[in-house]
Image (cartoon, rainbow, N blue to C red):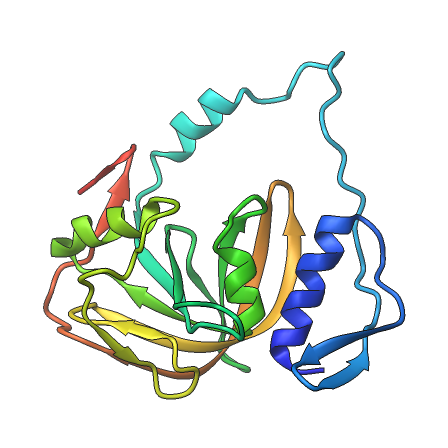
Length: 209
């Protein structure tokens, strides 16, 4: 099965809550067996239980950890009118051999299924002056690429945004569950840097630094 088919299978599996069976279209005009994906038990706090940590306190304390900011983009998949993208604080390198990176995305994200269908993505690491660009990709329902300058990443064709600190062009390698988020692992096919002397865009305690 192609990488796009694998990612789509993960989305369908996680949404349905049961193992997929039979055959599924991996790409237009072709079919491939769809292997069941392992699904760990996800236990939620019951209504009669007290959550071990309040969500507000969780956000407050974890907000003390400053993170870089990136925009994850993907090309338009079959039937899509345009590319997809969203602002991301949870990007990280994962493995040197093979070269892997990871990011986390909410399971309710409307952009993630579009990236999954494409099967590829590009991580655009933002510079300090790109706060407005980040805000544009953080909204839902708007044309996020309106007025945005970009070209095509060399391997995936994903939008590679102009003036970023770095870009990482990837194929979706694996998708795992992580509570109310998905853990997406990408295999790096190409990467590069922009202005290496520019400062990064950082997010700390609910605001840009």
